Structures are given as structure tokens and as C-alpha cells.
Amino acid sequence: MSRVRQTRQERNRSVDRFQLYKPFIFYTAVILLMQSAVVRGGESSLTTFAGLFVVGLLTWGLYEYATHRWVLHREPKAEGFNLPGNLTHLRHHADPDSLQRLNVQLSESVPVCVVYFLVAWALAGSWQAATHLYTGLIAGYFFYEYLDFQAHHGTSRGRLTRYFRKYHLQHHHYDATVRFGVTSPIFDYLFGTFHIEKRGGADRSLRLTATNQGGK
Ligand SMILES: [Zn+2]
Ligand SMILES: [Zn+2]
Image (tube, rainbow, N blue to C red):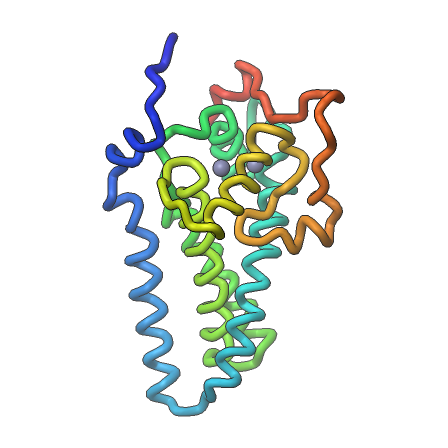
């Protein structure tokens, strides 16, 4: 079956904007509500907010890296249970230009957010501190959605966008065993998956077999 190839510009024009903006609208509203409750309580300073925001941002980077490397890239089972997102991500590798799933679905992200918030609350000892951590996490998540879109369908020519677009597309088209970070190379550096080996060895771009494309 042949697929009509569209240019990046053509794809961009046919994007469903509501689907694209849905998580941004939803989580911006959630964050505004939570932060306004913190401000009304009057117990948090700007310094506390800034510090916890950065920690939250870093936890996003670690979460993104760990999930991408150790959950989404697992070899799927032909039958039975596969970890959430596993098959979806492998399909994304098989067809990176698809406009079917522009972003993470709310049904997938909301449970993660709830668990994150509860763990952050337990560790930080207050819901106000957890709210700041959570705000950092969501900022990282927004940056992820923006960059993943820009990598595959966006037309932005900004320097930062071009750097991360190239970074992510190397993971897709050159070597799928490196460059798992989307919003930051920090964790690729730390876990030894930053370096790209020169061509000549085995092809490590991820190719799917007919059996594991069919599931879910
Ligand atoms: Zn991947
Ligand atoms: Zn991608």
C-alpha cells in the first residue's frame, strides 16, 4: 500500500489544532487553579517557587528519559500485556510523520500527574511545595510536546528548535539506541546515550516487524 508523502508544510496545515492544543489548555487551567490556591494561602515565597520549579523541571527530564528508554522501547510481546505506550511509541517510530496522535492523550497523562503530585506531596511535606514541583514538571511536559511536534510537523526555524529537532530526528532515523531525551541532553550525557557512533556498523534505527505493528 503506497502512502502519499506530504511535505512538512502540507502536514502542518492539516493538523487538528484542537487536538494539538488540548493538553496545553487543560493543564494550564489546572496549574492556574492550583497556583491561585497557593497564592491565596500566602505561605510560599518566590524563591521557594523558583527552586522547586527547577527541581520539577529536572524530574520531567528524568521521567521523559527513563520512560522513553526503558518502557517505550521494550521489545513488545506478540500477545498479552505490553506496558502502556510501548506499542504506540513503536508505531511512532514506524511512521514518524503520522498526524494520528499529535500528543500524549489526557487519559494517559492524568494518572501519571496524579501519582506524581501525591508522591511529591508525601516527599515535600506540603501540598503547596508539591504544587510548585508539579508546575515545573508540567513546564517540562509542555516543552516536550512542543519539541516533539516541531521535530515531526512544525515549521519553526528558531535556533533552539532546530537543535532539538535534529537531536530527536537522529534518535528516529540514525540510531534509536541513543538520544532518548527530547527536552534536554542532560540525561543522555549522564546515562551514556549521548554519543552517536559513525555509520558503518549495524543499522540501529528502529524498524518494526509486521507482527509487532499490528497490536493494540
Ligand atoms: Zn523512541
Ligand atoms: Zn518522535
